[in-house]
Every structure is written in structure tokens, then in C-alpha cells.
Length: 161
Image 1 (tube, rainbow, N blue to C red):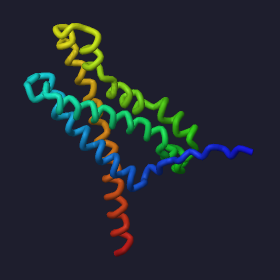
Image 2: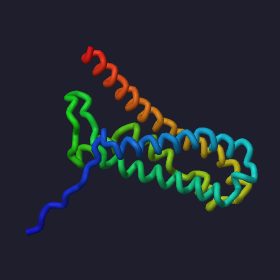
Image 3: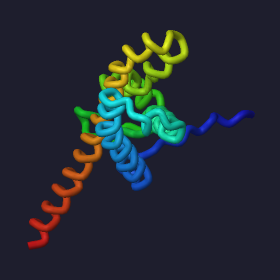
Image 4: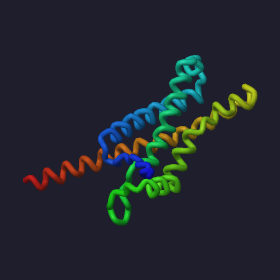
């Protein structure tokens, strides 16, 4: 008899997940600075293959973050319980505004334009790269966690008096 396949779930408060979220937040801040510079100045540094490879690696890491979000538990807003059922997690994330923002921010519009249209026309599509700035919303998740952690610390200090 076959055993059911066990799916591993990442706890929303897991230390490794927190470190990953912090890493993604740093990448988001990098994008917040670099994307407008690329669009406005189009300097040689941004045409450098190493910069472009780095940019594509960041895109891939954001795709990985989306996949991880489908396996990360969440706190039910009404009950306050941690939801660890893979189907409920996937459904909650897939139908959330966060998923729409995440998905939109990883579509490489500039790369697609570069492949399918002439260089003159693709340069006009560079402004679509600004959509990647939606990634900055990831910073909010880390800040919310840090604020919550700080609130817990303050509460513990209050009770220890």
C-alpha cells in the first residue's frame, strides 16, 4: 500500500523563513534603488553582462519566494490559529492580493520586449520595469514581523516588573 505523500510546510515564524524574508527585503531595497537608475540613466554599468546576470538572479530568487509562499503557514485572521493545511495555504495565497502583486513583479517585461521587438521599441518598454518596484512591499512583511517581535519583547519586560 502506498503511503500518502507528505508535504513539508514552513512555519511563518520559522527562523530560516525569517532570515529568507530579511534577505528578500534587502533585494527589494536594492531593486528600489537600482530600477529607477536603470530606467532613467541607461548607463554602461547597467548594460554590463554581470549586472544583467545579477538582475536575472534576483528575478529568480523572487520566483523562489513565490513558491515558498505556497508552502508557508499563516495565521487565520478570525481564529488566530496557525493554518498548516497545504491546500488551505495554497488557496489563501493564490487568491490573495499579495500573490497578484508578487506575480506581476516577477514578469520580466523588459526581457520579453527585448526578445520580441526591435531595440528602439523595446527601449520604450523600459518603463514597464517600474512594475518590479512592487517588490518593495516585501519590506513591509519584515518590518511587521520586527514590530511584532518588539511588541512581544516590551510586553515581556512589562510582565517581568
